[in-house]
Image (cartoon, rainbow, N blue to C red; front, side, top):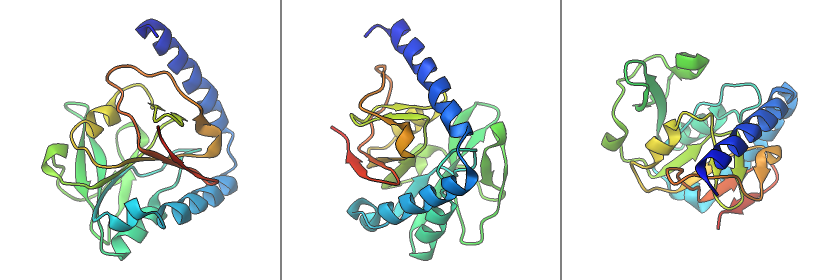
Length: 195
């Protein structure tokens, strides 16, 4: 697939799935997020992990990850979350303490109020939980188009697991050479091992 066509298709999917996310009832969002947490926290990839890199789900229609973060910390796992360096517009990571507080950061994304941001290559996470707008069962992922997570995931080869609602999952999504593939998708209904 040529790059221009893939970019157009990605943008169309962003709009289509974004509209569905914006219409998601908050009670349904919480119910489905809880189901995703229950499914995720029984998987060997979760049970074996000691240091989890995860997003903080804070947007309308996004998987709420605060329960997942709390579960990880309560079970003795380390957790780091991304923060946007406003000067470079790159993702840095902050390791969370058990008493973490979140505040709105760049783009309104929740970030820790305390902690020292570190470059991703300085932190040895062994599981990455990844957000996005649309996902393919083949491991493809469409984010918001800035490439933040592709750059982050390129730093370390650890299992890459997307947390998604079922309506975000397609057989495949357009991808470009710089797109980093996923290993698994966890939805409120199923676990998908990407091929």
